[in-house]
Amino acid sequence: MFASIAPHSLRGADMFGHLDDVAAADVLGAGTVRPLAAGRVVFSQGDPGSTCHTLLEGRIKIVQARPEGSQSVIRFIGPGEMYGTVAALMGKPFPADAVAVVDSLEIYWTVAAMRQLMARYPEIAMGSAASAGHRLFELQDRVGEMAGEKVEQRIARTLLRLVQQAGRKTEGGIEIDFPITRQELAEMAGSTLHTVSRTLAAWDERGVTASARRRIVVRRLDVLTNLAEAG
Amino acid sequence: MFASIAPHSLRGADMFGHLDDVAAADVLGAGTVRPLAAGRVVFSQGDPGSTCHTLLEGRIKIVQARPEGSQSVIRFIGPGEMYGTVAALMGKPFPADAVAVVDSLEIYWTVAAMRQLMARYPEIAMGSAASAGHRLFELQDRVGEMAGEKVEQRIARTLLRLVQQAGRKTEGGIEIDFPITRQELAEMAGSTLHTVSRTLAAWDERGVTASARRRIVVRRLDVLTNLAEAG
DNA sequence: CGATCCATTGAAGAGGGTCAACTTCTGTGG
DNA sequence: CCACAGAAGTTGACCCTCTTCAATGGATCG
Image (tube, rainbow over all chains, first blue to last red; front, side, top):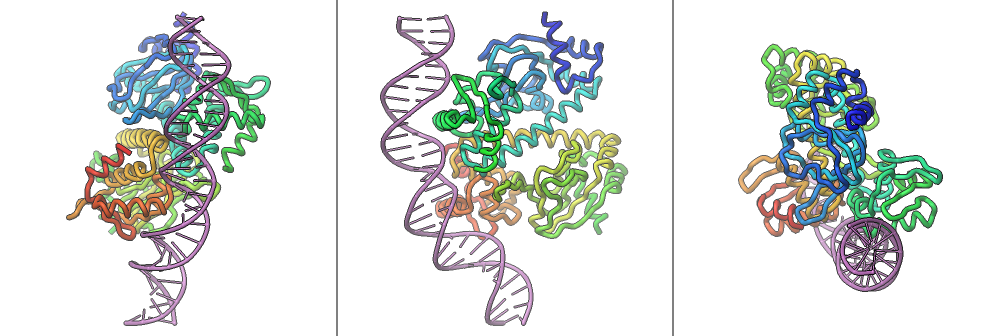
């Protein structure tokens, strides 16, 4: 069952998309596929980075905890995306926790195995370098945004980013295709769940969004984009 | 004169440190060395990323402008560091401006030339990947910090980061070895020059720092570290 | 059908941004 | 060498946006 699901999902991944059948089977065989129940911690901040992961199905969040107790959600991982890989390849401890937000399926490799795969199939190395590059750009933007913008603007941007990464068209608008709490949105935008709650309530009022428990639909992407750009 | 300075500086760079003399000369010959007067814009946000740069001497700041006019300093570049390279290799426009903060000396290559060099000397590719990885981690930390911490804490962290990147031991403490304004510090920490001015004044009072016009000396690294960690 | 998780809403207070006026320093040109 | 312009920094007062604190109300699940 996994054997039939996994190769398919692997093909969806940027780094594995160009591999032929034989290569894909090779890559798959070198790793371990495993299901992750919602809430399951895949790895923890500070753990030695000794494994490289790719999500096949579901959704994972990468969360950084601060000493005082507050935490921030660095990013959400969707199917086909790698995580933990940069730390592992650099021989560094994982800089954040990885937690499954819904029941998920992942494949992981030891660093050693991943190195061999990268040597054998350079497109994997290329692909993961490119994805790291994209993340670098995205983070750079976020730093700039968090520095200068007001809360509503930051929440709008965060939501837009989620739409792009996990938006699913429905009647009525674009829905974030996994359950997300006000708290998590706040931890991404650098605010509090209270302010996020109030902000979403106001947007719902104006018809920009339609939010419910752990669920957000963007109804007016144009208005939201506006909110993100002009505070 | 440049010919004598540049190879030496190149050796200081992480990516070029392991090259032998012949290779270093090759790398050097493939690029162009040029001086940059203070204030000179090396490349601008939005320019097609068609060149890879390495700083040989001086200091460069990478600045991202927001549409409304505010801007944030993403990072400062010191001798031996590459910049513009990730964008160039990915064929993307530069995501920020690069501006010389003091008279500087750089070497740059066309992307094509850099690709050839990387193919010929894989350690250059390795080194630049490693440096991108470090930046990824640093930015991740910064996002987490900016999300949860108070202004004084963020300013302390920013200063600590500068100490690490550009600290020079002097009698009396560790000095940031290039001129930096309150404004720039504010643009890094995500605050205003007013608040930074007040904060530094308070720290000077307490003997934690000794600041003057465009000049900051950290006298009590331990206290500053404390301020950064416990708000 | 409790227990827990998630969300809402109100009220209060402060941190720090904004506005404004003034000072000091640097360097340039007459 | 002095004067002046511009850049950098200081400081006070105000006020607004968010966080913080607190209490309550619905969902969801075992």
